[in-house]
View 1 (cartoon, rainbow, N blue to C red):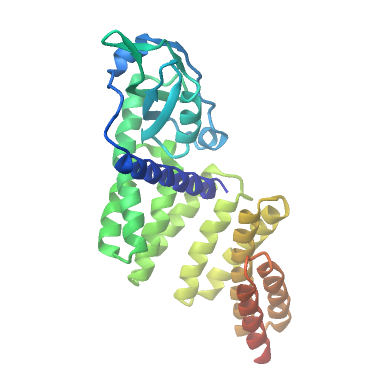
View 2: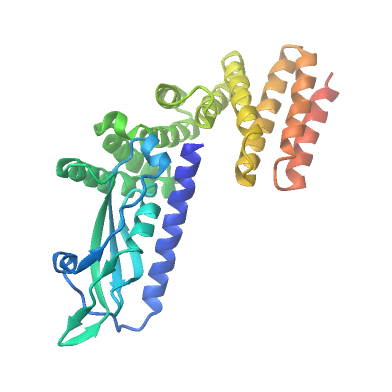
Length: 329
């Protein structure tokens, strides 16, 4: 679940940046005067420290969020634009900065709105060396991770692999502090290996991602189920069904626990989709071994959980797959 939230937050930040960029491109060039950050800081009369997001705290994510702001004539923060910062930390930081208060600024003897840049650290007690390390990581990791993800979505596997390997190196340099980011790029690199039919390399990457998740998370976390599913899907592709089956069944166990305790529709749909696909896969494996009772039971579960999907076409596809499988018996 934490990895899913990281991605959702990352997408929200990127959408915000796109909206701001469009607004800037269509706004007439009449910007307020720019005040150096150190000068603006002298006029700061009230600041709010961001809350440490629980997900960031659990994953030991810390760092600096850098933003550009417009301070209006009353000294309130009017507009804010993210410049850099971890997607998990950025929303909390921006929300806190919006509440900051400054003494009104004068330019040429007239009170006016101004522009400046601000930074805030989460948590507040990190040292300068830690800040520098985090900034270096952010610069190296996120640019390459996003470029690699975009290239992967476009099918440019060579570029994707190059960018993601750079992101991998940045995460590995930070060790356990960046395990979640490391798992993310390992999974994408595993996907590239599978698409290139470099199955041995893909297995090494996906197994390592699973092992890191198991090291840092409870055994019933949704991310572990996702890692098991990814590795099992590779084993199915390699026709190593006996290794795929226990991974898929354990993933189903975890997702059933998670779907029972979440009211969030998007999460239920995601868990339902993975449960339906996993149970169909294990039903086929059971049928191949002539374990028809297991195949039938798993088909029923696949249909049940497919109903969490948002469209009836997806439910119908699962039902057809089950009917086709059981007709063979």
